[in-house]
Every structure is written in C-alpha cells, then in structure tokens.
Image (cartoon, rainbow, N blue to C red; front, top):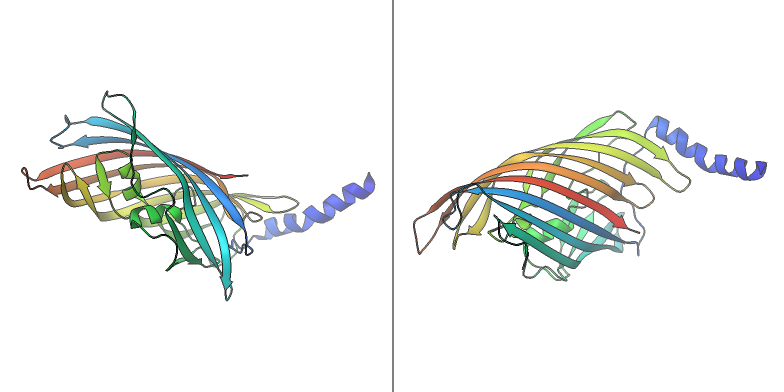
Length: 287
C-alpha cells in the first residue's frame, strides 16, 4: 500500500509544482492522434423587416455536428491537421410552425487541412474536400465554437491574456432556414485561467473567456436576394483544456449578436432588416 501511494505521489507532485508555477499552454499532438468533437449550437433569432414574416418573428434553430480531427503529419515542428464533418443535422421552427429539418447542402463529408502552430494559429493548406468557407470556419473553431490562440508566456491560476477570436456566425445562420451568410465575426477576447488541476497523465486547465466582436460585414442571401449584413456582439465561454488530449475537452458558450442587413432583390424592393440573435453552444470530445 505504501509503495503504491509513493508511486502515485511521484506521478502527481511534478504536475502540482508545475500548476503552482504556471503552465505553457501548447498544442503538440503526436502524428496519428485522432479526436471527435460533438457540438450543438442553439440560436434564437428574432427578425424584423423581412417581407415573408411578421416583425419580431422568432426562429428557434439547432445545429448538431460531429467532426473528426486527425494529425496527418508534422512539418518542421508544426502538425498538419485534417478535419472532417462526419455528420450534421439542423432543425428549426419559424414562429409557431412545427419544428422541421433544415437542409444545409455540402456539409456532410466536407474536410480541410491546416498547419496549426503550437499556439493554435492556423494556416490553410490545399488538399481535402474543399468547400464553402462558412463551414470550413466551423471545423477550426474547436474552442467551444470559437477560435482562440494561446499566450506566448506560461500562465498560472488567476492570470489572463488577450487574443483575437472569431465565431463562424455565417454557418450557424444557415440553420435558421431563412438566411445564408458567409464568414465569421471577429474581435478581441480576454481569457482567464480559473484553475489548474494536475492529474497523473495530464493537467486540466479551466478557462473563462469573454469576447467582443467588432462590427463585421458578412455577405448573405435572404428573402430571394443577395446583400450584406453587419453584425456585432459579445460572447462568454467556459472551457476545459486538457494537456494530455491537446484539446478543449468540454465547453459551454453563450453569446448575443445583433445585425442589420440590406438585401437587393430582382422581384421586389430592397429589404432593410434586422436580426437579434441569442446563442447557446455546447461542445465536448467524444471519448
């Protein structure tokens, strides 16, 4: 019994010391590493100015995806990561109508390849089954539905850093069945280290992120025409990073986004509308 206790202490003590002194957050998976992410994002979207809907109509939509991340090679010191949509299901209810499936064409099987630095900076590579950038952005937003980067220096409990972030709003709007937008909204995020929990094989890093999106124009299609929407808002997320899994293994994200849009149509006057969007997301690694 004493031997087993001493062995356990020998495994945990170095991690405890590291947690007290701080930890360098880094992405360094081995070649062949494979993870599946299960994500579900709910939007409650209130629309104003859409000719096909009464003002203040609410659209409740849910998009659930399963994606697979694989490390296919290492170039220099940086891994090349392939990510693929394994499954996708979107459902929406517009106003008081029954909830129904929403077709999002071209998502199933969509894949991309990226060179990913140890601080989670991403460089696109050729290869894979390319497609709509709105959906490719989702594949690289594996920090609770957001894309964040790590700080240069080690961090300890109570410390924070600031980084750019992005959220793939365009893809999630497609799940409403009324708006198809392209691209991500971006801004600045502050990430706080709530605590570090050493374990025998890794360390869990509990993080809280608060982000503000700059006013971002996105091309879109709605009401039978094309145009541009300008969106801004804020997000809060609770994330758990595992140094052993090299991933955010569990996350909850909430956000509030507003936007104004103008759509030009051939068969009618222009649409000048507005959206108010409440976002709730959950993401976890499938073990």
